[in-house]
Structure formats: C-alpha cells, structure tokens
Length: 368
Image (cartoon, rainbow, N blue to C red):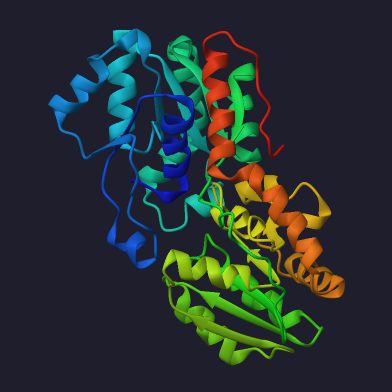
C-alpha cells in the first residue's frame, strides 16, 4: 500500500535525481492503517497506480524494458509482486528486490494453519531456488535491517546485498529541540500485539525500581485487553497509561516530547518508530529483532536488548533512567545525526545503488 514510510524517498528520486518514478501498489491505504494515523499519499512527480488490472500490469511491464528497473517487495507474500516478477523475468525485465527479514518461526507460526507453517519452513529453500534460476535478472537486493542482510547473504546473494530501511519524513528545518519537564517520559507507539511485544514492556516496567517516570502506550490491537489487565494486576514505581491511536503528526509531537521511545518487538521487519524518534532528538530502546535497531550503533542513540526478555528490557530501561534526561545539546546531536535517515538522504543513497547497477561505484548506506 502507499506508505508514508516510502513516499518521501520516491518523491525525492523524482524531484532531486530526475528519475521517472511509477509507484504501483496492490491496494490503497487500509482502514486499519488510517486508524493508526497514517497520512494519505500526497506529492507531485510520482505516478501512483493502485490495484492495477491485467491490462495495466502488462503495459507497465512492456514499456521501455531496457530503460526500466523494477523494484519488487514481497515476491512470496504479495500477489502483485509475485505476478510482476515471475511474469516478467522471461521478458528480460531487470529487478531489485526489497525485502524484510523472514519472521522467526516461533513468532510467524503463532495461530497459523498447518499449510502456512510448512510453507514458512520452506521459504529459505524457495529463496535459494529463485536466486539460482532467476538471479541474473535481479540486479540488487535491498535488505530492510541487519537481520534481512544476514538472511539474504545466507541465501547466496553476496555483493548484491545492500542495507536499506523505511524512511518517513523528518521534523523539518523549523523543528526546535525541547527538553520535557516533570517525570521522565517513556513512550510506546504502535500495535498491541504479541509480535510487537507490548506485554513484555508492561512486565518489564513492573520490575523497574527507579521512581519518577511515566510510561504512555498509544495504539490498539488484540493484546490490548491483556495489557490493561496486566496494568491492573501489577504494581509500578511510576505511572503507566494506555491510550488509543494518534494521527501521525500528533504522534510525532508526542514522540518529540518524550525522554525515550521503546520498541519491544519480538520481531519487527523494520520498525520506523526508531528513526522517527532519533530524527526528533529522542533516544530509543529496541530489541535485537527489530530491523531498525541497526540505527542504534552508538550508545548515545540508545540501547539494544534481547527480544522477548523481560529482564533484559528492564535493564535497558534502568540504564536509560540512570543516565537521566538528555540536555538540549545532546538531543540536538541526535537530530543532526537523524538527517542521515531522512528521505532525501535515503534517496541519494538509493540513486547511487541504481548507478551501481549500471556499472558505477558501490555506495555505503549513510547510516551505517
């Protein structure tokens, strides 16, 4: 779907680098994502095609084959991507894969049917077969996070593997860093689901011994009632409140007014909240199964903790609380670094990947 996590990069590719960009999506923005506050796609210079029919797909695949590069994400999970890839390799089309890491078995298989379980277990084999049979048509593989990089190197893609992610808009040039007042503010923003690890965060907060903090959760999901029950049953040294979803711009205001953002996912292909927080001067505690934990390579940007580990997350939170509230200059340092992961920076890097496909010099990701 047309996600604001990708739109800025595509708009910059067209505006700043002169590419003709056609963005083809299987469906429009879903009701669930709209409720989560995702904004509708807006912008000039990118042609958006939603739910194309067979005639449109064939036309897009057949136009200017030698001058086109087709980026496809989710070949094994998205019917449109699968159709465009397997229907186009025989026509001489050139591709770039864009993939997240495979979901760990213990997370992916929760509630799945027997057939889904077997197909999930066979995914690495399918990936290797695609590389061996069609690898010549795939010119690069954009890997969303370090876990994806490791997986696709294991599949044998070698030098074609490039670091990548999702890059929502930054706060803009007018953004002014401000230090929160009152209790130390801990923020969770996202779905209440098993995969997102909201229950782990609630249990970890109950073990934090420091005082003078407040944790706010924003979101909805099938685990919300469980988390509400845990909040009622457990005791906390600080305050814990659960709220509904916020519109994206309001959510970013809340993030900017926090002292730390927590991403407790048992698995998250990327986790855009990590970058959104860093760009606004807020450090992050994220798990090692969060793709965007790759952005936390320096201690002053945050901490990486083991996924699903209540005590590990508790220790990470206590370290942040012990360090205390960041100063204006410390937050400004984060904002400055965060410009490396704004859409314009990611587009510049992606343009270099395209040039590499054409025989240019291999680029390094600006955030690595």
